[in-house]
Image 1 (tube, rainbow, N blue to C red):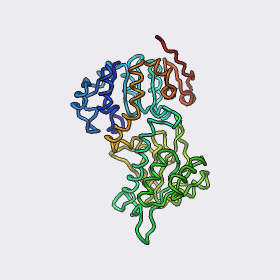
Image 2: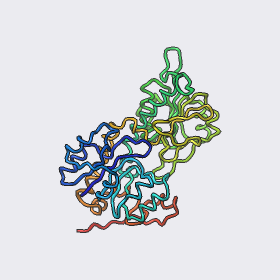
Image 3: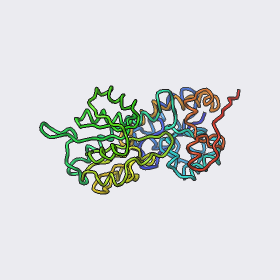
Image 4: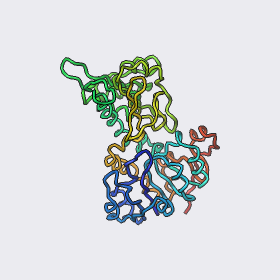
Length: 373
């Protein structure tokens, strides 16, 4: 199969679709891999690193899109990228179509693209590809918050996250006890912060209690407890995820107005629209803004801050799915692997994701795949 890895250009993305190790695996299996020149630079992978594995370096995105049968990306498609797609291609990426533009979805359908969203691939343990990025985002959320709590930053409270003897640590309130929330809680606890995790799922809260031996305070989510937690927080981490859907605003603007002056909000849910009403998308080069005296950090591709680690993590989590299609063909791979099939958003000109169909008022057709010999 011919596989293309274009250079990412959305939101200063520095990750790359596959690391050289993944390309090597595909080439050894007899596949042809086209890598756009400079695609790995943000992760410190040179063109030579890819060419040594047997990849073919090409020098324009148009060439990658025209040559490839399957495209492997990281960031959601831009409208321009969706227009470069060729008929009947397969696409892997963190698509986040629920917060994307209708034109992108229409181009996927018009061109019969099999679009597979990494964030939707699901197995018995959860969302395995998204899991690797969520682990990173949870750790980074605390690193980022710690930096902006400092006095020299844009109005930070001047608080040491872990405090010192006789001086209280920062209060870190985390909304959501999933992978991001758990990773953030572990990191904050390790730094000595006072950590509170709020979630509506009692089983998740029990798991937090057991994992951290009751060193973290767990609270059932409802408007009252969320409002109290937000007001108490020096750091507020938004880590709410509803698979394939736009995140609900569980923190209102009125709640934000009650926060401490110089408190820090890190809305990790911003890639799905954000769970805090005052959140708006920021970028790696201009990551924060102040609203109601509260510092907001709302970068949707946070793992790009550690792009080399993130690229390796994505490679490790996604390669088996990519290799399965390359080795077995699309139909056989999808029919034989319900995990992979669960990530399909569009297939043969139809919308095969019910949430997406409802959002954009499209006809929904359940994915039905019949392998051919």
